[in-house]
Amino acid sequence: MEVSPGDLGAWMTERGHRPYHARQVFRWVFERRAESFGGMSDVPMRLREELESAWTVFSTTVATHQVAPDGTDKLLLECSDGRRVECVLMAEQDRRTVCISTQVGCGMGCVFCASGLRGVERNLTRGEIVEQVVRLRNLLPPEERLTNLVVMGMGESLANLDNLIPALDWICSPGGLGMGQRRVTISTVGLPEKMRKLAAMDRSYNLAVSLHAPTEALRDRLVPINAKVGLRAVVDAADEYFRRSGRRVTFEYVMLGGINDGLAEARELADLLEAKKAHANLIPYNPVPGLPFERPTAEAVRRFEGVLKARRLSVSVRKTKGREIDAACGQLRRRSEDGREVAMGRSTARVGSSPDS
Ligand code: SF4
Image (cartoon, rainbow, N blue to C red; front, side):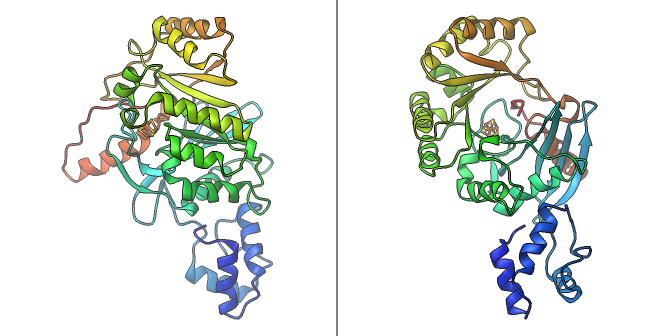
């Protein structure tokens, strides 16, 4: 997955093979779910052997596969350099949604998030992003297809725009999985410059902006990058994304018990979003062991939602999937790495927190 069909075709040509075999190889991977070259029966045997000795279909390996009682699958993938990323497959009625990561760790430092506890280590490559989707798709029964893709796992998506967009474009192309761009949602903490760059790319991907607070002061506390970019600039860039793409922007709001889930915050959020063609998605916090934030009460969520609805805003409350398997972003990786570090005789106690992404 680290090479494009064009690059693989050039490699084949150098060795005296017809370059069109590259398209066959990728068809096997994307359409027929092949995970090795051996069974690609319409590719010449000699070429298959050369492929086996020079390449692997996937550059990652599956370090952990957890399945929650509700059917949610979570994979922890190990990259060729030993770093680990996580991705999730959720099944709901007729939807099959994958949630993927874009970075190892995250540099945004949201105070409630497990992914940001150790900062960012590196961007994922285009191939590592595509592989998460293909590996999760391969868990589905043969008759099922992925219906939705959300880029809401570890990392700040737009900080890795240069690899993310080619990866998504490949997934959405007829030579990839052929997903519709409108079935893909890119989540961002809100980097105005990158949001404008994405808007200028003329794609139809949906944008979800992680707001988490309706005022500059509260957002500065919860989302430290806000002190540099400012809530107003984030909302303005979201407006521009809507103007240019025609796609309604979703504003994500992780509800932290007793911190941003009161009626005052609900009214301030309504003021901020009023008159916009936008959607608010409320996400009751999924507690992370060791982090000092709590899930809001069901009553607090209901009242908060009620305020937004009374102002005629489009609003939903996200259902939590896979709580039993560390489905808050960064938890599975953190637990895995804590295990490795404990085994090496080091203590890893930390304080921070995580949204339910
Ligand atoms: S919530 Fe998202 S942007 Fe914030 S630290 Fe976690 S992964 Fe990064």
